[in-house]
Length: 532
Ligand SMILES: Nc1ncnc2c1ncn2[C@@H]1O[C@H](COP(=O)(O)OP(=O)(O)OP(=O)(O)O)[C@@H](O)[C@H]1O
Ligand SMILES: [Mg+2]
Image 1: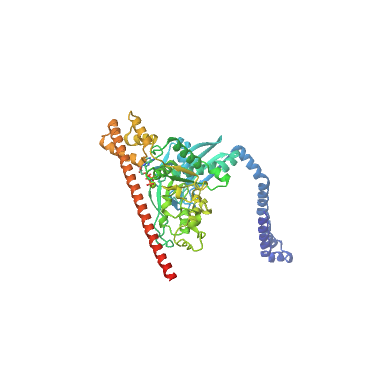
Image 2 (image 1 turned 90 degrees about the vertical axis):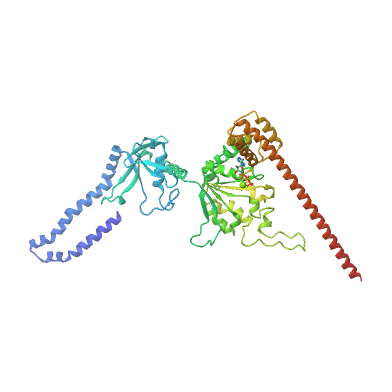
């Protein structure tokens, strides 16, 4: 208002200055004809400008408010347009990248997936950005209804044609219409809900990926990429995973709780991530479990190869470049890094036990240290992105530094154990398509006594399937023979390994004894020399 007043004043001032000459002529000249000529602009200005100003002020202060009230009574509906982002939009796998406006894509995805789109009769199908699927959305001009917490809403797909008739200039909108009194619910709750749902749909339409960290060439070069990937298409699910049923349900419940706890983590002030430690002998299904988890949650997998990561900051960079909704796996953690023993031993020099003991060598400069790994799991940077799962697998849990696997870092410790009868039933179903059989009793008894891994049992079932030509009884008979053979082979291999280890230990002891005898003789000779 004040700005408008200033501008009017300036216009007046300009006008008075411009007509100053005419005014002076008016007061010195008695000719009324020419006086009228001079007064004409004043009269015309007052005649045109003042009523307009008067009307506008009156309209602003009084009429517009009343007009709006009247309009609300006649048409109490509000519309919100969500427009297609203009200009250059960069697309990631889930739609436009985050520095573009993603709302339009999310709304479109929501409308394609929501029950409301079932009402639309005229649809449009576009190829999904990834995979072979189609994204179905409403054709321009279509309306669909939706309901949220008892509030009715209507969406319509609108296109505004370019005035010059050029298709490139067309703008598309998704227009939302609702009653004025629901404005708060719509803006604060419904629209965020639509965006969240839309993002979920975009996410589930993409192809999942298995990433691995590439061997670093020059991390500062333009072409450098921390991760390379292939499409992840592993067939394992929790249904095909052979393990104790109660344990499996526990893990699935835990994953479900994690996935649905976004608000809880925010409320509790905890980063939205969870750690799982999978441990057990080789072939018990640790890697298989990771695949089952990824398939269950519909997450990507980042398989970290620690041996090619040179520094803690490289490790941090890897972490930053992971996306949310992913599982970060470090396999055989005990083999890839010196994380055994206590934290001090791998990150800083240990206290010298005796005065003459040599200080341990400092950790090599180009390796990842345990403290770097601990920061990777739950340092400040680990909170970026959210909704991430970290999995470690190991064959030797007892060797790991307790700091690495303490609860809170590795929230759930899962022992992958030898194949017992329940796990065998799953494998028999997977490989032989047999749910139950009279020979199952014999298998149950056998597996109670023998420690065979699910990988061993799976191998036996493969052999039986081939040899038994798919006939259940025949296959199971062969399976039992194969299991017995495998158990005998394992027992023999273990006995041989034990004998070898004993022989090595004895040889080592004999060598140490001989070395001690030589040193004792040398010391005795030195003493004799000194005494002479
Ligand atoms: N629990 C299981 N359920 C179903 N199949 C299994 C299971 N465990 C092992 N297998 C079979 O054995 C193969 C090897 O299993 P996997 O690689 O998961 O074992 P692992 O515990 O990761 O072994 P390692 O410690 O040597 O890495 C799998 O390809 C799968 O076919
Ligand atoms: Mg493995």
